[in-house]
Length: 324
Image (cartoon, rainbow, N blue to C red; front, side, top):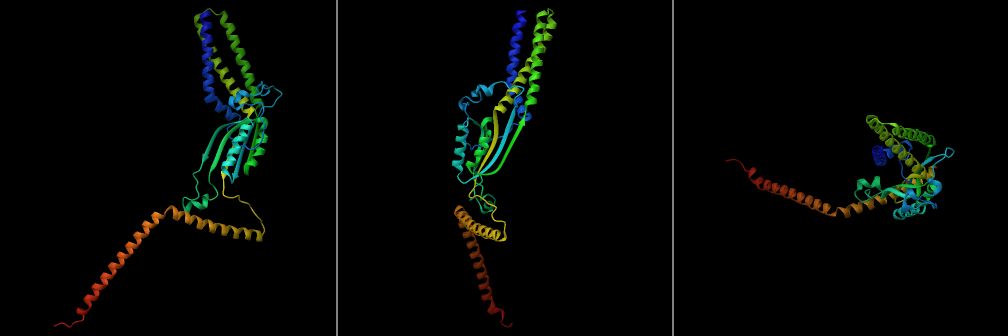
């Protein structure tokens, strides 16, 4: 019996490692899909985030937050999305990162884009004159300060849109707990049955069943851990866009709309000439080349035309002489 005990222990350990490795790649996305956790975050509040250590990641949670959920406690997953405009891009992004650290959260992913320049060409100016650099990030923050983060985003610039969603996964987690109890009880019964078996074939069949159960148990625990993480850390998406000015709706009366139209027309005229200047500076050598080429072609054409006229004048006196 010592031999199958040793084999069983090794098989169970291997199954647990396999499920854990697969769970981080396969089960985590499934849990994220089931629990509606595929989002990103923004910053902006002065939350405290006590009980969390960014250096240690999620494992630095307080004892109260890492304790097993009870049947009476609701397991809620919070998701948020915020879109912000700012006149000072670098300052807003810096304050965003500082607020994440102050709240005890961490950045999962971030992206900075500056490919929408407003001086590239005249044709692109109208579309991108108010959109310059942009920043987006996925942030996980303690759920205890989730509301503080959403309300604090107004400190980063002008909030253009804000979205918040909460999902109750208490029933889903309770079902997983029940399944886990059934699997573990079945596993224990198989172990007890193994003690009574003497037939080698029966022992091998039971070992296969125990291996399958080990994989199922490890997979289920991985999914439950993923849900506990999503409950402890909310997910929020933040987008920060740099603009040259904030746009207001203005007065809705006739006089107000007329004043806005005149103001907009004057501003767009100045922006047009500004952009023309940038275009000339950017393409002066092209303008010089094509201008010189056009001047050369025109001069050649005029020279040829003048030469043809001169030839006709030389022939003109002989054309009127009488025939002999």
